[in-house]
Amino acid sequence: MDCIIRNATVVTAGSVSPNIDIGIHEGRIVQLGGPMQADREIDAAGRYVLPGGIDAHVHLTAAGSEPHSYRWVDDFAAGTAAALAGGVTTVGNMSHPGRDESILTAVQRDAADGLANARCDFFLHPVLMDPTASELDAVAALHAAGHTSVKIFLSFRRFDRAVSGFLDAFRRIAALGGIALVHCEDVAIMDCACTMLREQGRLGAQHFPAGRPLAAERAATERAVAMGEITGCPIYIVHLSSLAALDACRAAQARGTNVEIETRPIYLFLTEERFAEAGGARYAGAPPLRSERDVEGLWAAMTQGSIATVATDHAPWTLSQKLDPALDATNLRLGMAELETMLPMLWWAGVRGGQLSMSRFVELTSTNAAKLFGLYPRKGTIAVGSDADLVIWNSDETKVIDGSGGYSNADFSPYDGWSVTGWPDLVLSRGEVVVEQGQLTDAARPGRGQLAQRGPSQRR
Image (cartoon, rainbow, N blue to C red; front, side, top):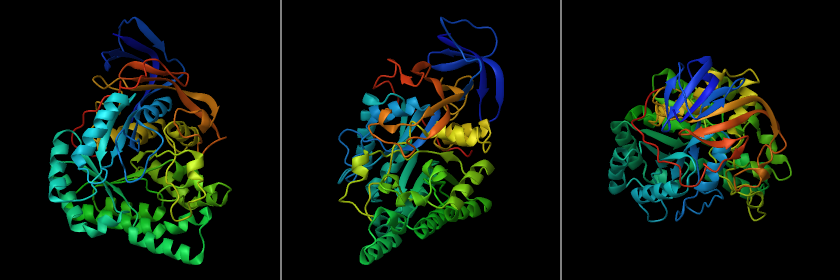
């Protein structure tokens, strides 16, 4: 063995097992329990050992990319540093083609940049912007290369201009055994809502939710579900924020349609009243924050099991960029940094708060994403043969969140000043200790991350 973790309470999606020793060799788990020896031993007594988190939805700016004017402040090096510090050992990055760039070229560019700079393992979601014949043909080539998911935005005007082509894309993804990630906001409804805000002079940040109304999310979600139903394509609804959209998905799930739901931490902890605060633009995301009733409904759905994953949609800006006075309610900068806080926040409010079991926490933050995106059982669990992506979790450690002191290049967190209990003590990525006591080690160097091998999407 290269390393042994002793006296672990191992938490997986299916069990909580005390007093287990974990043997690691050449980056993988090779033994659970029984006699073994190694030069390095780590005592995990009194702590839990979890599978490394998998954040399947991040936006890291790759060198040379031009993602339609979005230049988020975290590149692969900074974003994956924040991920590791928060217990996330694998990220799924959106690969946006630039103007006049093919989907194949975008993926090749982002893969090269990730291999040069990522500190943890990563995979890519090719973003299909234009369903031309050549781009649709590229979907099969990407799938064969292990890129078995495709991202589609219903919130872009180009979707309605080429809806037949996008339906063809859904059919092809289904035939290949892949999965489609769908951003569900109806662009025509949002355009109308923003026009009305301008006409009424309601342009302060407090009016941001009115420009991306719940009706836009509900209508687009119903449309995406119907398209998946008719084409047979597995649909993964990203960053779902509302009960109305949740009800549309649950109705489809009850009919047997393959619809999976992702939600996002901001929709579990914050409500739309935040936009009325001074500097409320910092909370802008897509979709917007919703009501307390929506928050309660999402927590109930996570407990019940209809929500599959929690992911950050990590798309960070600095606070000055978010509060740019040249922006108004119709065009605020969307996104924020959450990679470093996602797991601690969910543990604190979910597990310690009595709303989630530890095994359900592991499902939401690791196992389900591994299955849906073709990574399981190499990732997402603690088993012989799995990658030694492990988090030794201190359920009693309390920290006050300070986004200005984190690893992200963003200089704020939406939870600044919150006192949160439950943080990683040590993080291992493929058997290397990359975080100790909240600090990255020398092993967590840029370029050590690998492009994760993926197979077809699996049902969870």
